[in-house]
Length: 166
Ligand code: SF4
Image 1 (cartoon, rainbow, N blue to C red):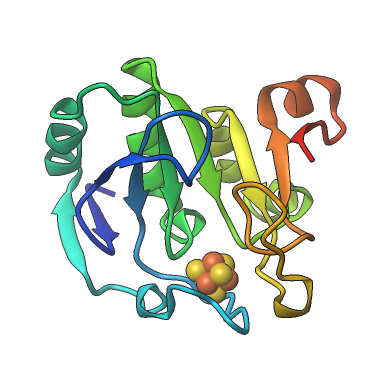
Image 2: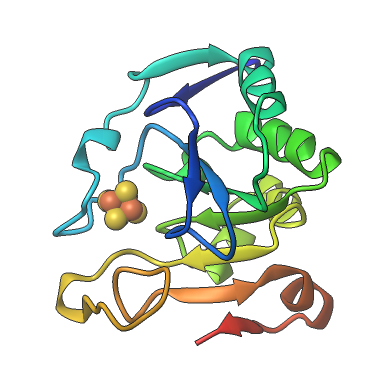
């Protein structure tokens, strides 16, 4: 898989999508259909910016003064092969990695083996769908209270979900 569909170019200097100053890579495509989703324009598949992975790597190379990279969308888990390759590149560059997904961590482990490999490159996973009735402005970095901030290295090591923060 040498191509990826992104919803836009990389966004830089975000302080809303994880700790520190971060760049956000917005993936195109999501079929979770959460009621009240803030990014409905990212739901359709195979539209948006169709990029070679090399083009994404070049954009990553151009980043300056960023503490980490956050993957959001859409849902990056719907393009797992391309996502995995980009994650490898980003980790090789030493970036801290956060990822937003509408899937639950436990379900990802059951769905496809590639998801376990993907998770091994992620530091913090923000998991679960946005649930309108649980919408909250008091939970940091999330839209609704059901979503969890999961410390993935600790979770993979211990075999049980370890929260990064509440
Ligand atoms: S997972 Fe995210 S992008 Fe997808 S529908 Fe839910 S809130 Fe929207």
